[in-house]
Length: 312
Length: 221
Image (cartoon, rainbow over the protein chains, first blue to last red):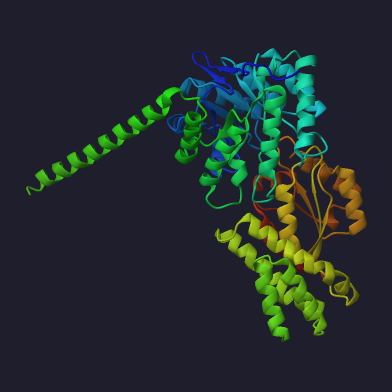
């Protein structure tokens, strides 16, 4: 299989909205915060069956401009399948954005997929035989797309060449053995913390461009990973994404609340010709301008009201 | 150069991760007839303690922790055989590994560096370490502490499998068990019956030292 002449399209849907990931599309921002990992209070709430914090996270990611929402309910010592099913139902009642159903527990993925309305993105499968055998049938059964990571049971390869070999394996197994369309395979090149090893950025970039050139597949990465352990994380993330976009990155799991990072991918959309006439960029600017003016007006009104009240 | 200058230089250069200078000062100190244990306990370990403290305060970042650890490790390659010859005991031995089914090791490696920085002898078994491999390493190295690392909610249950294997082998009471990794919590550590958990590398070292001290107090040698 080789790269087709037209960009591949990974089509995700909720009941009412469609989002397309592709090299000729605006970058797909997959909001990452609906995830309890490392959030003690959220974990305790989920363990008690309280999903109220999810509502705030959904609202914040939507307001920040997410195109898709990642939903992860990986809390130790809970029934993750039941939680993920409930979370999927809840999030779909709050937003019409398509979802990325995120778990390393196969039963939880299946429960989430069964509850989901539309065409989901599954996060994720690896090149391990066992994971491929368990997860790809679900992807096929529920007509979903899938994020695939090029690590196997032995290692996370630190050379691009080995990662590309594993991508080849994943593509072959998914398409030939499970009849999954290459359009529905989204490769994560493994963006690792640059603070722990100065070579990992280039390795991910090399992997990305090889995946684009050989197969034309869509790609994603955990954008916040790259800056782990470093100061100024938003700046590193906001620099990383446009670099990766020129190497072929078409989506990222990222925190849509961080305006700097979202702005940088939207600016890159303009620069890569994926925001026609910069209309999205301009309308965002205009909406912010209007909001600022409204806020300034409200402050002025309030001040005047106070001044009148004290008779000055 | 006076011995005090050597110690100060070692401390300062370890803190900023200047490996060549640390190695050079190690040689100079030994050349002056300083005891290897003095270089370790009066310069290298205090430097890494300061690295840990700065990291906890948010004043130091992961790369700085790594280069300080590497600078110390370079010196330790020279000092370790000498320490063994002079009968200086290490702080303790720590057998560490990422559990079976899991290939993630960045966090584990950071913990290793900080443990070595605190004077522990670390035996790193790598990733995908099966319960039998942990048992074999515990038998061979007789560590004070064994550490299980897991990055995925699907591989965390291997903690329990490892604990069961330890129980079955009869070695459970011979070794302190610590667990850690991104999704791991104190509650989870308690449920699997581990003796300790820590959220990051610096906290792991503190926990390891505290557990070791408690054990030594409870079981007089």
